[in-house]
Amino acid sequence: MKQRAWVALAASLACAAAGSAVLQGGGSPVRWALADGGDADAPAPAVSTAAVAPRMAVNAPARRRASAGADNGPTLPLLVITGSEPPRHEGVFTYYPVRIDEKQARAAMKGGHLSIPTPDGSHLDLAFEHAVEHENGNWSWVGHLDGPDDTQRAVITFGPDSTVATLPDSDGQQRKLTVESGQTYLVSAPLSSLHVGVNPLGDAIKPVGVPGAGLAGTGALDEALGTPIVSAADAAAGKSISSAAGQTTVDVLAIYSSGFRQAKGSTSAAITELTNRFDVANQVLRNSQIDASFRMVRAQEAQAPDDTDNTQMLDAIRTSTPWVQTMRDQVGADLVTFVRQYNQANNSCGVAYIPPGNYAAAGDLMYSVVSDGSLPTGYYCEATTLAHELGHNLGAQHNHEQDATGGLFPYSYGYRNFSAKFYDVMAYGPDATQRFWTFSNPQVQCKGLPCGVADYADVARTLRLTMPIAAKFRTSKTH
Image (cartoon, rainbow, N blue to C red):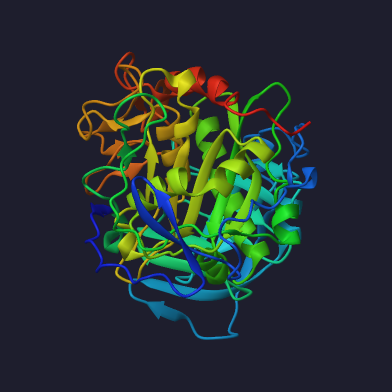
């Protein structure tokens, strides 16, 4: 049983360390920790065209559901739970060291299944659907458990030196693949012990006044997003998500904290984790029957704290970080997201601006903050958090019961079915309910029932209107 709860506010933040500068943001001083002690007034580093992903057709097979022939194909083991170290317990989560065989995933694309052994001796049998190739050296294998109308997918992302995976819930367990310091782990936790980190005040920030006007700074943030840390790996990682020809593509600048990179063990592993989250978001679009995609045009590390409030960080990024705006223009990013390691002080798993009525004039509000990871207490952030926050930027609100106002259109709301106990990506779910990987859409089925209501809860209809507009907020620098 998944239970949503609000993580309490943390103690007041410590002052910035030596080598930081005070800049004005949101009407109050905000400290920005410099990555190298350099000049805070220096211009943002130039971004070469090599950091930008060209527009091109996906190199992988088109989406393919497992056919009868595929169901009869071989079942290949993706991993082996090794005895290299004993399982590690961190609160409700257990970490099992595993060894990955990427060749089996490639082989399973030819009409087979992937098998993921579980610690209890059973296994997840995944039928192949499609693959996504990325120019940054990552690729994702997407499949599903056999079962009725479950839109959750296995999204397994292979990188140059790591493998991460978002796996379907099964047998009362949540499982995923993650990497720490070069070692891959199968992480398992009972669903009954998990709580999604949600702020009951909401995560959709509604600006007051004309489009482009944000929230006033609170002065409570002692340090925020520092100068970018530029590396060759970051530049190479910019060549990320490819898109199908003719499809609407919204380009996203993904900034991530140094703490996020340190938690994964390397820049490459951090990029693989980000790639997985974008592939999950694009799978949500597919499930919702939306012919569009998100593309990570650059992944950029920045020295920034992981232990501050997400709402304050959102405002600081938009109002007090000139290099972010400069880089956004340089790479042609329509949206900007900042991803960091989940911390209790974040007070949520993410926040984003939700635009006012004139969407075409809301380009300067296209910012979000996403927390990623979990705490030993069982609080965690879902793999669909990025899709949820980008949904807010595109005009989608929570379900009506959670937020009665604020959707871009009267139908721009998520959907929750109380009697059937399911909810979509934008909705807040009560206890003992199932999250479906879809934006509300009355034409899509969840548990054999519509996943939305016409003219009332139809985020898919909203995104079909707003994504083509968002794709023009900045001039694309890809080909």
